[in-house]
Amino acid sequence: MVREARLDPEVEVIWDDFHAEVNVPSETLRQWLLTRGSGEEAFGPDPDLDLPEPGRQILAVLRKRKVDLTPEDIEVMQEAITRIRALTAQRPRRGNADDEWRHALLDLGHDVLVER
Image (cartoon, rainbow, N blue to C red; front, top):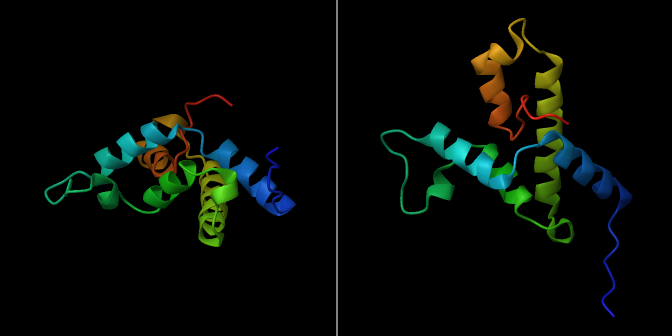
């Protein structure tokens, strides 16, 4: 019988909050980041390494299981939660039509057009 490893309750809360705030699938985030990172020097031998930060770190966390999280992953999750919440709290007058604001959120894996 396989027994599930117990995680710190705080990590459980961070995991749930992270996945509530980062509301795009990992492949969608990857495609967005590839688009954002494209340019003259983009798309080297390993395109994932050329992805803009912090999106690359968020994408790496999205690809992990909860039991495989490192302390660094937890920091990435906490920072993403904080940044997404700060940006959504500062919704511009133009709202979703403000491309700069929406793109800043998409860089963090949050799409304001996705219903919760």
